[in-house]
Length: 151
Image (cartoon, rainbow, N blue to C red; front, side, top):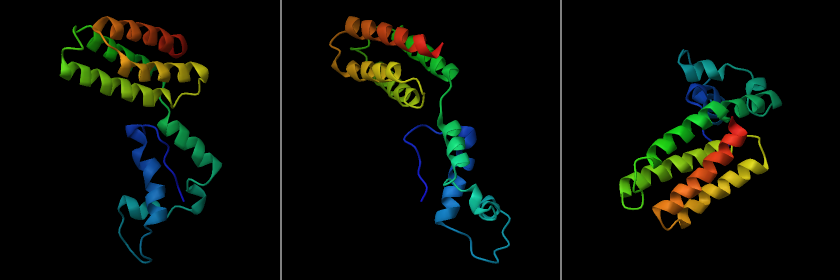
């Protein structure tokens, strides 16, 4: 059995991450001369499967988010917050919430510990915000918290 972490997979690593799991579950028929990627992948040895420790390390590399990507996401969210009256603009509010949710997933791939847990809790607290000022204040605190460990 393979597993996928509950974390984003980097676009460049999708085939390397999913192909061994797919091939283990749906092996090619013996004698199949197809030279497609799944056929080539089926020719790999079992040592290349995700059950090895080496592969688990590659999986962590495939899903882990870099601090640069975190900082870029923070900048994108800041740009959305600068657009104004969030509570009154349903589309803007939805865009911000989607970005915050993605940021939360990215943060959970980092190995920073209690600072990440604090930031995730702060993101969850956005649901309780009652005003534009409250949202802006929460964003300022969250941004400061994230930049303290991502910079």
